[in-house]
Image (cartoon, rainbow, N blue to C red; front, side, top):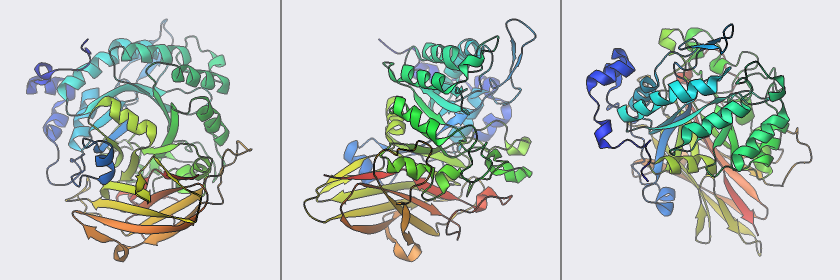
Length: 499
């Protein structure tokens, strides 16, 4: 049976007049075609990365954004029964405008994630979803997932990404109407508990088509380094234990990165700042992310725009793909992009400092890439070869700059199993084992390669990579410096199991 949500060629041949109607004249004329001067509009790796070829020759690095708001992030008048919804009170752009701008800035996939509210599940089903279908027809080059910014019980907001299928709208409606803490009208305080969040995750895990859940701006409510707010290490662990193939990570780099351009905190982190644009849970070596990885958890990071209103119109945001990108090794289809996100075939970057990144661990003819596990024998001392490949931007980024990588760091930690303390947020085994400058990498084809050997590996470990255009040894707490001058990229880890 043909999926009615897949628009055929006959539906994608939309006139400019209809495009203008749905997207707005300014956005349409500015972004009807991708960028041509720089590398940002090219989502596929032209290097033909070895990792992608090994698994599937059609897989390549495809940039996307799973946290984008439309005019359906609105307001509710609760003086009426049922509440009356007003579009555009929080975010202002039509769904298709976001898709056009995402295409313009090089995205292959993205997701509409509007705020919830009392009876918002009905707004999503009856109003927003039909607009998503129109946007898919108008901008078929961009895969457009359905979902929402989920009002997670007892926690801050989360991505709730629904697999692409005929009944995707009903699947989201069922989850939002039952579990989103603000959807009930009248309000139901009983929804706002951690037990309810765990129940939601278990329900999602048991679905035939499993959604994905990723935490947003996890430390935005933190008041200090390691002094967390709404989201805590214990809640992440309990949720991941309940649904390890659904609850898979958090935003390493939150949205609202344009804040300093209008005199506001980067990321909206007004109580404790981001570091190099990244959440403290990710940016601190040996911090919470490393603590979770050190338990062997497959817990991934992403980077998003959280686009509401562009900074040139008074907001704190960049367009989808303009500054932050989540790169997934996948084919250009919904299922494989979602599979890549679920399984950690992901790296993230800001300002298009680089356009491809591969991290590969190898031993005795076997290898593994990001999100994968290399198994080696403990019969004798074993060396593990690590290879880092990256491709710099060709042309200019969204700010008209030509950024240059100044340093790449290789970070390694031991995998020691589950912690007895669910609140722990440090891993003392994690350290930067090597720092590489331009003199340490060599050009191969259109990119650069770095090789490093881990000698005598005798216990389980993971390795990850980060890089920057700055001279900061560790990413410093952010002030009001331009985000375009402070660029970073992070890989997700590759694991090594010793057997």
